Amino acid sequence: MAKRVAIIGAGSSGLCAIKACLDEGLEPVCFERSGDIGGLWRFEEQPEQGRASIYKSVIINTSKEMMCFSDFPIPDDFPNYMHHSKIMEYFRMYARHFQLLPHIRLRVRAARAPRLRPQRPVARGDGARRRAGGGHLRRRARVHRPPHGRAPAAAHYLHSRDYKDPQAFTDKRVIVIGIGNSGSDLAVEISQTAGSPPGAADEHQWGQAPTGSSKALGTRAGSSRQRRDMVQTLHRPDSSLCPCRFLHQHPTINDDLPNRIISGRVRVKPNIREFTATAAIFEDGTTEDNIDAVVFATGYSFAFPFLEDCVTVVENQIPLYKYVFPVHLEKPTLAFVGLIQPLGAIMPISELQCRWATRVFKGRTGPPARPGPAGAGPSRAASRRYVRSPRHTIQVDYIPYMDELAEQVGVRPSLAGLFLRDPRLAAEVLLGPCTPYQYRLRGPGRWHGARAAILTQRQRIIKPLRTRHVEEDAAASSVPLLAVLLAAVAAFALLLAYV
Ligand SMILES: Cc1cc2nc3c(=O)[nH]c(=O)nc-3n(C[C@H](O)[C@H](O)[C@H](O)COP(=O)(O)OP(=O)(O)OC[C@H]3O[C@@H](n4cnc5c(N)ncnc54)[C@H](O)[C@@H]3O)c2cc1C
Image (tube, rainbow, N blue to C red):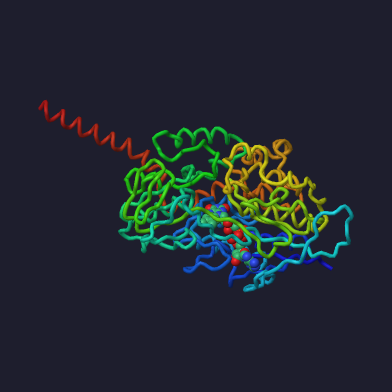
């Protein structure tokens, strides 16, 4: 009889967990507390308890080729950076295509997990149910209070989770606290209609996402050069936006922010020192008075109330081996999926974590090494680079982490072998964007469409931009014609002058 796996949450991590179970011949049952799939990416006007929430205009900041599931490319006509409605469309297509829906029980909240035993020297019989946990199972919005005083009494204040659209802020003076991805999105959007909104910087740095940003940080080769180019473009002492060294913080990606700053519609300020009844006083002593609203874009913390017996989260830290398996459990029967903050997209990481976890559950891959609590958390390189903060406890670099997981599953692409067998493909794997299909070229879960998906990825990037027919040689051929006309006019003028 197939082993049963309980999956908590039917967001993108839960969906690929169901698929991975089915691929391994396990029997998944997914419990979703809300009435539909999609998790964070399903927009609702009213935030629901226990589910992260997005605003009306949200566009994902990871490109479609970098964020798709590895054996299900996003349709070529979908935009490269998708609105949440398109992301939901893709998740629904994925769920339908792989027949995941019959395994989901909606409106069922996991309230308590069976007690899992901590590690002990003597192994016990395998009676425990194996479970894959949906990542970000329960995240609570955490409003970071300013260190001194409260938000101005007269002001309306809210967390970014409760922000839906800018209407309520028309002609208001607004402070957005935090200049991470949500903070900068909100500052840009609110600045279209607000009075004069100052954005309060919170030690975050930012980076700009040009249309090719799937490549900017995501190729196997050349990433250090690309990073240097980005630093040269962005890390200017007069920008007010880079108070720390490049890539020592999770980067903020926003194309519109520079335009709003240059037109004076968003002002970047230092941290807030104190709020008075009506004003905000910043660390540099400057003041903004008559504040109408304060938006806390200060991020999320995570908690797993139904797993209280098994795992404890302290200051956003949780002892997981490679961010998946709790280090202290006797058996690897519990896995966390998508509990990660990459420099890149989460979905392919969740998917590879699921492929690893389900193979461990099934017994096809040996149990993960048990390094003890010291082996959990960020790699040494990540700990050295990132600023120590609750924001970076689950921070990873995309390619090194994906390769680590792929090593466990046995699907890491072998570049040397690939160059001998298929140089064209090898060149694209090395020099092109490190798309998730690379982890389907070989080993368990190999997908016959992976090669074609890699070789056609650039066409899928270009396709949605070609929305009208443009004659390619129109511009080139018009130059000689123009030159001939000008020459004819000049000759005619000369002729008239001398006659
Ligand atoms: C504002 C914002 C923007 C983001 N932008 C990006 C981006 O551009 N690119 C990117 O890759 N990532 C982004 N992320 C990260 C995002 O978390 C992932 O993209 C992705 O949604 C994670 O999927 P998930 O399934 O792990 O979690 P979620 O999408 O949060 O889904 C979790 C599901 O579990 C359910 N659940 C929770 N508790 C229980 C329970 N006790 N019982 C049953 N069901 C339960 C919830 O209802 C929910 O449906 C963003 C996050 C936020 C907050």
